[in-house]
Length: 381
Image 1: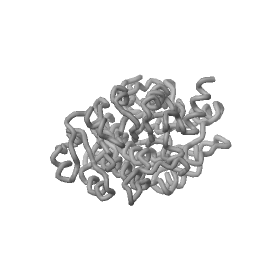
Image 2: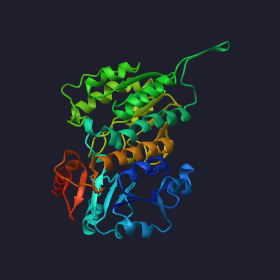
Image 3: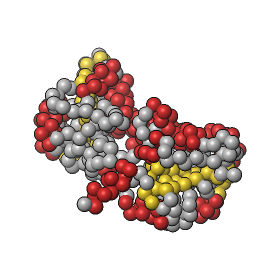
Image 4: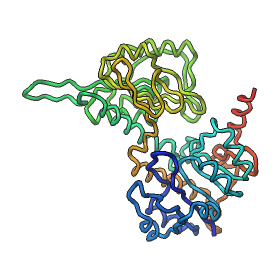
């Protein structure tokens, strides 16, 4: 019988987990054994007994769990010391494969088949297993709350006997999954919202949420087949910076969500522009952990520059860990279900399948993902 194991996250301050008790019955119906590490759901106030009553086995010893697992599901990559204990195991998690060549080498040394959740293609067949989108949507919500919590004024307009309070102005840069959720959340909270994206075709989506779309003529832009924005030329970047500067200076909260898949995020706001904002304003930089959209943002920290608070804490969906865990756990089950052989209960690894071809990173002792191979070869030149 196939054993699927779920480890307790060792990443600092991580509250999410990869399995909820409500998912276990569905796994059991597939004919697999579910094994969890003790205290898997402790940060969500879930006890081991909650998982046991749903049908899971509990491993008190992490090493024992790693040795018994055929497939390991997690959120973050397993620590190196854990990978060294694996032997021909399948590992499924967020792997950040573009930036971890040494980690991929170790996976290959241990014969680990790895699947990276951020590499799941954005096609209609994959929507139910698209963890990058599910977590980004919650991140958009959380970033608005972060910005609001550091702002010294309210978001909605208020008409009171003591006077009228104007609505706060929120500017969202990037109208992908996270950006659209940030726009929707800020609007629900009563802010006056403006947004910009290099893809002019998303203007209608922005406007449908009740926000204003900032028109900037950048010439020829576009998006990848996966829906990600294409990188701008240096000239286009300069035009964007100059024309959005006035909107930034006039905003109470600025939220940047611009990230380029597999590449460092674009620097959208420089210190000169930050200096033009009113003291007490807030910038939330979604990309701070991977290089930052904002000059002066610090990964994992909240800093102040010229009276402007810049939030770069990252791991945004972790702030709403219960819902984030529910969504991620469902993404994982949907992925497993898609490739589970109903007769044998085995996980079918057909690398000619469009999903697995793009998301499996290592297999059979070598890196097999074409995009990652090309990235590594380019980096070696």
